[in-house]
Length: 193
Image (cartoon, rainbow, N blue to C red; front, side, top):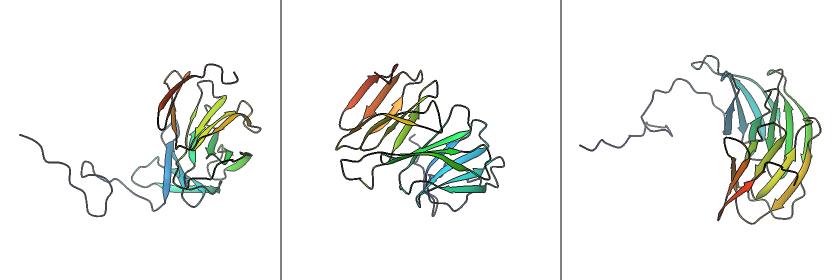
């Protein structure tokens, strides 16, 4: 016997496969979790980053927000020590000190030169190297950033393409997969080469 496909709940965007535990009204475009899974970081469509306490998942609470670069499709990734949040699109990259969740501060900002028009629908993706010193950022191109000094990030390279790209590092973090019209695979053991 073939099971019925999941039904949609009225007003829900998820199939009827699980109970909704809680919700907060926020126009999030991206969400990542802290290492202890008690804090959620949200990229908000109005161009800010919200920090949400989810230690009690039945009562999430917005702790703070910081005005980050106003892109609808900003990607987020945490530093390896969990003290900094990296927020970026292919126009700007920002480092946010999150040691105090109630008072996050932008501690560094880097603007990229643009030679192609921004695609307002191109979502950025971002990943961090195993040693936590290199960020890979993709949208309409690829930016590689040195974040060994988080308060002074440096652009290693920037390439623009006319294709929307997404990227992901291998679990070992030395192979970079870039997908667009083709899948390209790079050895990034030494991102400076």
